[in-house]
Length: 57
Image (tube, rainbow, N blue to C red; front, side):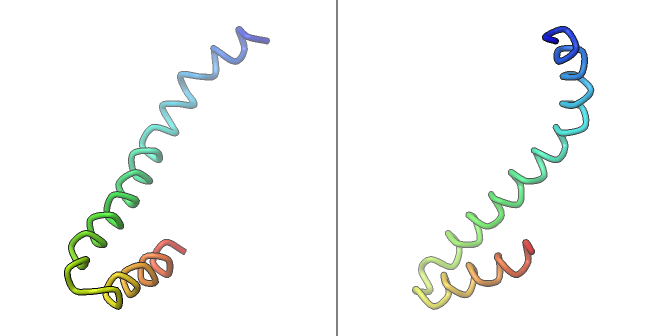
C-alpha cells in the first residue's frame, strides 16, 4: 500500500505543482489589490472584494 502511494506521489506532484502555484498567485493578486485600494476607504475595499469573488467564480 505505502509503495503504491509513493510510486504515484511524484507524478501527482508534477501535475498538481503548477496548479498550486497558480492558485497561490490568484490569492496574492487579491491581497495586493486590497492593499493598493486600502487608502481609498472601505467602499473601495468592498468593491475589490466583490470583484474578486465574481472574478474567481
